[in-house]
Length: 165
Image (tube, rainbow, N blue to C red; front, side, top):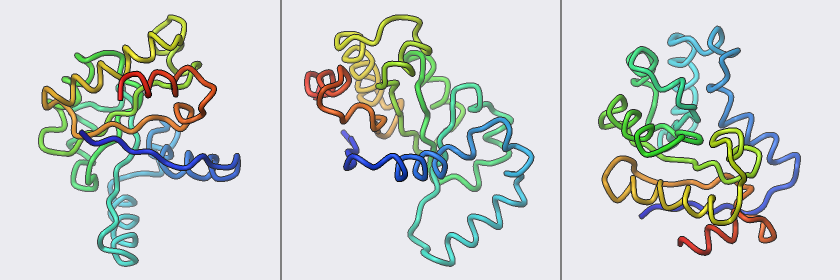
């Protein structure tokens, strides 16, 4: 089982981190992140450090056969943010093939509630974490990375993480 935990960040660090990991996922940025630009960007990154890996954060609607066929050569893996259910993970796994798939469950209240249309209780969040853990046990993904909101100790997501893991 692969679970990542990170230190709590300041608002400035969160803004910078979210921008850098989420920038490729925006539908507004498709015009910028062309295959030609991606080739240059990844080449420059590898010149600085050949051991760096590029795992863009993508949402379910972006994990399509067309998108992956166009960009797979640039991806060392994909972080799939907020899958709706195990079938959503299985679909992404099938499309990605041997490309590593890391799941980011919806652990912050507003993300969970907008994705699942129900309250982000400790029990519902624990169910979300179990769902992605079960998907990993079935070989449908390669790791889990909780959204930073799950690491704040007074939030239901933190209690759910402790309950499941």
